[in-house]
View 1 (cartoon, rainbow, N blue to C red):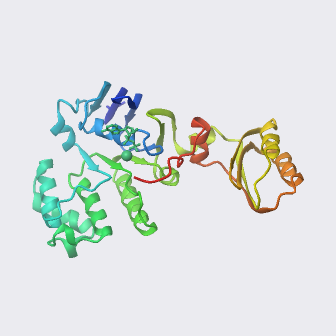
View 2: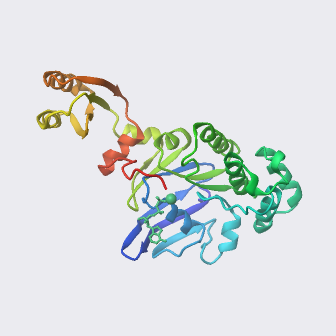
Length: 315
Ligand SMILES: Nc1ncnc2c1ncn2[C@@H]1O[C@H](COP(=O)(O)OP(=O)(O)O)[C@@H](O)[C@H]1O
Ligand SMILES: [Mg+2]
């Protein structure tokens, strides 16, 4: 097999008392869209910082194209198209100047030509010679992607590329990622949106509190909980503990999670009639109920006992 683009081994990163990464090992292979899926604070950005050589790990090793980013920072950063969560755009330069500067830092040949092509690809012609500070939110977002694409690197790293985007701009970002996939690039994508990882990634690492808790393709991950499904009930009044306890005690119920008026039960499908019976016997008024297949959120909960979005507020 050919060399992995990135090899991370037994990587640990401590900030004082906080262990941001704890013995993390993985590789990024050519052409794959690898997702690092986990809640805020899981260690996703720290992983990226170590890959691009912005920090020195407490222990463990990182190799990018066989190079140590701490020793070959420039070479490594030139080999990676990096799209940070906070766009690194100079407001007082024009769009073209921002892109030219990046192209120069990457050391790519025929800068003018390449920058013109990128401006065209990201539909920034209209604003090409305007100051970046005059861009709309969507245009800034496109420029951020364009900056990560200017070097045409084999590996593109995207740190939470769609946080806080409206649906239209999220669809645009997904389109951009699909384009990378189609052109054979490898992508490392961090996200805490399970739909995004499910939709775009060929392989996913589930990360929680600095540890990789599971990995596989979206299908493989969901298949580990294969015979399971989720039944949800929204009650008009809070259900009694006995109901939740009774459901949890059923042999083929994996777990029951009560959040105020909503009850989420993960169960083997054979247990569904018994659960439905207990709910019916409780005589609670049900506002709505649903049964559905397993999602990556369920997989995450299965491995960690917590919700992907538990940490709530977005950074
Ligand atoms: N520079 C830093 N100093 C101290 N703690 C940090 C620093 N950067 C990250 N952390 C901590 O490391 C953990 C992982 O953070 P981060 O990698 O940013 O998570 P994510 O990107 O998954 O949201 C968090 O607990 C965070 O508070
Ligand atoms: Mg982050």
